[in-house]
Image 1 (cartoon, rainbow, N blue to C red):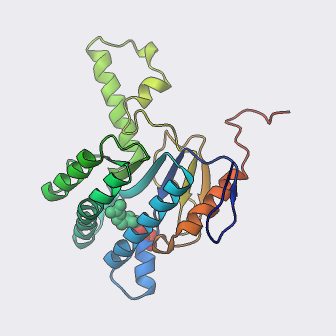
Image 2: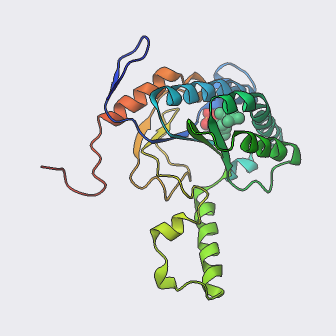
Image 3: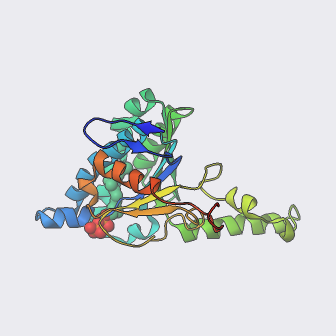
Amino acid sequence: MTTQRNGSLPLDGPIPHHVAIIMDGNGRWACDRDLPRHEGHREGMKAVRHAIEAAMEIGVEYLTLFAFSTENWNRPEEEILALMGLLKLYAESERDELKEKEIEVRILGDLAPMDPDTREAVEEIQEATRGGTAMRLNLMVSYSGREELLGAVRTLAHRVRRGELDPEQIDGTMLEGALHTRGLPDPDLLIRTSGEFRISNFMLWQLAYTEIHISPVLWPDFTRSEFFDAVRDYQRRERRFGRVTAG
Ligand code: FPP
């Protein structure tokens, strides 16, 4: 399949069904400009729009963005307040447009520590966009891959204790059914910005066979062009899922 876009090379090959992004480098972007860190996050919100537009344009079905990790609760209070404020602003200001574009939004993570106003805003955007069929956008908030796995193990252990489940019955599909991402395919492509080669506790189960693209740009500088570069890189990969090459 060839997809032509204005002003750049065509994408020629399979389009990833599911793209996940670790949006890194907001703080460094702000620091480089002698700005407070929250200005980097604010600018990063624009890059979120670019990524959504680019994904929609080429027909990505699932886009998953790592917006706030469980570990981020340990940042200075000022930065946490700024990030929660931005999430609320995003949920309120983008809700109608995302609904119109038929993008279904889900916020995945442990929302218990979130302040009530932000929680209400994210619940509203989920409700408003429910059933959208063009693309599913997952915002991972207060999320940690290890916590997610521990939660799934606890859920299954309770079922064993209640006598509903024999431990021998537990398989990958059952575990996946107890993750935040239940029902979603694993990401085909993971993009991480700011040149760091780390997974940072993100989707530890789901990334088992995902192709990884590291972009050198800081997240606020991420544009559609960087997104398409990542997809082109993906299209050059040979995915073997642990098997040998065909032929
Ligand atoms: C990592 O950069 C980024 C974050 C912790 C937050 C990501 C948030 C946004 C992109 C804006 C809000 C998004 C939505 C969807 C509302 P960092 O602060 O760790 O950067 P550094 O490594 O340069 O310090």
